Length: 99
Image 1 (cartoon, rainbow, N blue to C red):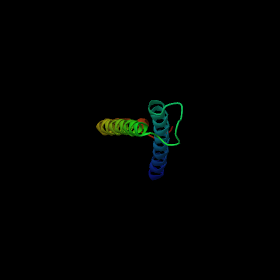
Image 2: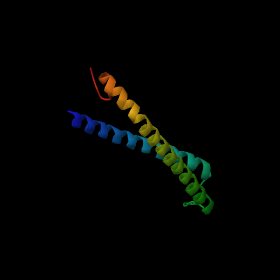
Image 3: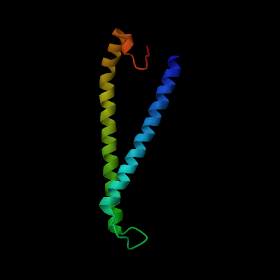
Image 4: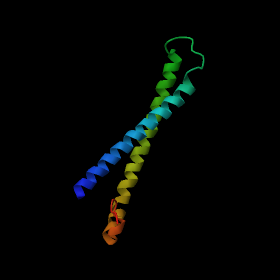
């Protein structure tokens, strides 16, 4: 049962990560398009200035996403011993435990 639970948790975490990446992509696309591309299209392709602006905008989004991910990972690793201690003293608080 424990391995089944962890497989379910892994699947849920994977699905959540996909949803978060889709949301990031949607927000990044909307924000960078609004910021960098003029509303009236003159050409079928982006100008050099628009391309550079979009490259920088996307790079900033990805950098922030990476920083936040590293910070959340660090916070999770720091809290893990505390959570394990709580679960050891009170099994009803264990993640995934249903009563």
